[in-house]
Length: 300
Image (cartoon, rainbow, N blue to C red; front, side, top):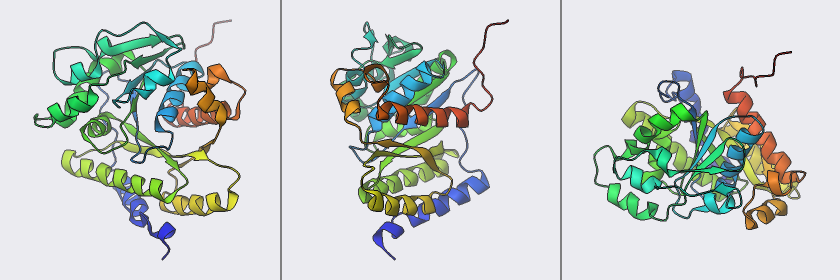
């Protein structure tokens, strides 16, 4: 058996068994709760934050949802990627809320000039916060509790998780209804998916529930490498039957250019191929999670 074919072959089997038994169950949203999506990847450089930012922006701008994008990564790349869109500053940080200072997560929210999109403030203290939370009882549930109020305010909450399986990522996974996994067409990226799937399985065993795998999305696709891409696509599709999204995000220099000026690709270059790719991804996810939703139209 080849390395490409063998890596994570059991993942798809476990997922199919779990789905068949109903083991991957949607987390309780609470009264009037919005949907929570964790964007998680255990390998850096696959466009995780870029995907989280543009999914959030497109669902808000093009699908008229009230969206909150929460940055759980201490690098603060969400705020950096959207700095030209930010309006004002927050009074608190995610760290302050998680450390139990009797604060609302809404106090860490910053508005943007993108209609219906809000984000949390950049938080360089998240790394030390993770260490401080390590000894606390119920440490994996802190974010989930903080989101109860937030779910009543927003239609969708998107969590940009750190590129590791630390405590903050676990908080994100426990809080989420769904997990979106960016995955470039490489062996190392697939190994990271394997680790993430093991974590989802452990959550289901320990807590009796786990977020649903919304799907894998291929990112940073160099469309010139057709033969190599086809080989890895086939291996992934075999293991994740029905779990790989149709949308793909190609390599696009316009996306990098937009990040340099702190804007989304929709604002900087709305006609670019990268904008088309991320709109298609948002359309696919919207159709899957809100199949009967209709935007209200004025009465005739």
